[in-house]
Length: 201
Ligand SMILES: [Zn+2]
Ligand SMILES: [Zn+2]
Image (cartoon, rainbow, N blue to C red; front, side, top):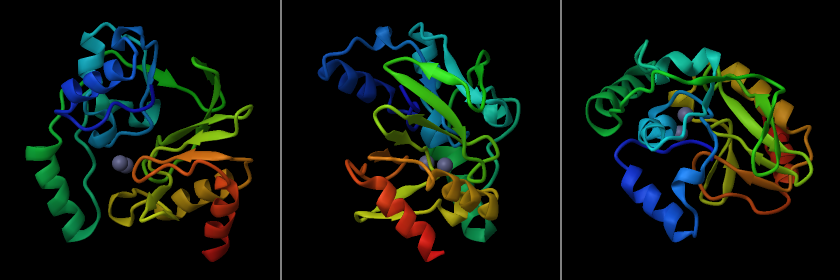
């Protein structure tokens, strides 16, 4: 499974997994794409269910383990939203025991998924790429909004220049299907749209 969703949604998500015909306890690994709580919020629920392979890049892992707070968004608006998220919406229970996700390693579970470092949105942001199926799961390195492919959210991106370098790196791949952290997935022809996006900047 990739990402654990926002805190407080655990029962709902487990219900969805069961409704899809799967046993949540049969999940072998959970890859967390980056440290934002809307992606790691329920990790502790899955850990308590017995899923011990929770993987995240070393540069983002100390947020998940609770060793440091979630870095704030940018400017007054970003900081104010972060305050509300931390206090009310996205309070999460940390997971003390996480495994480190390494660049270029292969996470072999439900196919062969290569870990690509897509730093910038957060320092340890990672994407998963299935070369055989031409599928990319990119966390918040990219998003879709109203059927448009966009770059990472400016308010919550730690290093915008680096984030766009990562987008350019992804644009060199053959990608048919793209699943972003926010917005609907692109089922086919995603690399063409990604190259168009890179051409615009
Ligand atoms: Zn994010
Ligand atoms: Zn997100």
